[in-house]
Length: 95
Image (cartoon, rainbow, N blue to C red; front, top):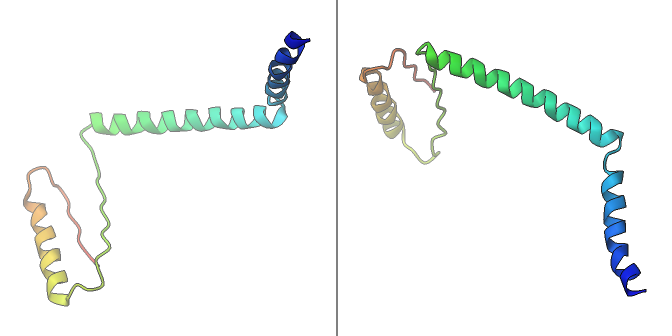
């Protein structure tokens, strides 16, 4: 009898695992595979762009409201100087 009682939790766990292979789980797995393929394609495209030497970097900043107009202007002017860095082909700064 002890062995039967010890075996019951494993039987319950096994039956619970088998129930998870229903149509909903299969649909979720199918969608995950499709999304994985899409991400792999995007990664290949990104790598191809890097191989061509093209890289675009976009940065957005949210400034503190406590900055004065002078501090904001000084920051923008400093950022504009980054355009002088070798390898920077196009730098746009705005509010």
